[in-house]
Length: 204
Image 1 (spheres, rainbow, N blue to C red):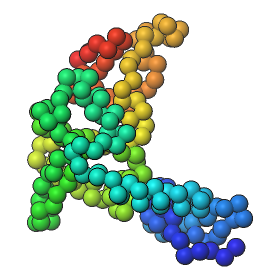
Image 2 (image 1 turned 180 degrees about the horizontal axis):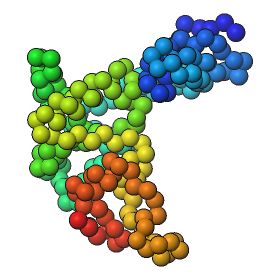
Image 3 (image 1 turned 120 degrees about the vertical axis):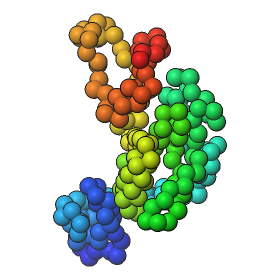
Image 4 (image 1 turned 45 degrees about the vertical axis):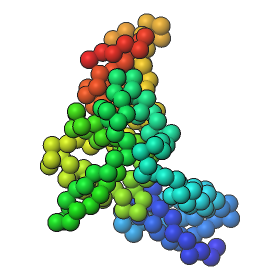
């Protein structure tokens, strides 16, 4: 079938590529010019995704008072541990960073000055679009040089973030083993803030 002049992002590296073939079932097939991986995508889903991106762009994403559903999970995580917005953590605050001898501004989702920590909360797809992953890496490196840590939570991290550790005996398992494997980012946050166990108690 004749291909259309529409590019679709590579699932592996995020690079946009033109399809070399379309199927009658509505799939576009690409060979990534950057990472050389082959992939396919639904043309309908991709069209819907572009509409979704357009709607998201119209939201006040840099406003301190506007929370996405992902950001609300982090807010809940921090508040359960006694942190208060505007006092011990700040949402969408503007952070100036010197990069390539120029001052640039970033808006990390959460800034916790007491811990010298910044937390990002968004699906991984946002970090691989429009070369965002390069900008994210440079920002993380710049903050690391200033003694700050940056943790970006993807959808898998966010699903686990507010889960409590369940007693293994009720599940017929070893009581010393967690019923699910905690992600590396969630483990890191638990080590910084303490983890909640059964009954909502805080365990350092």
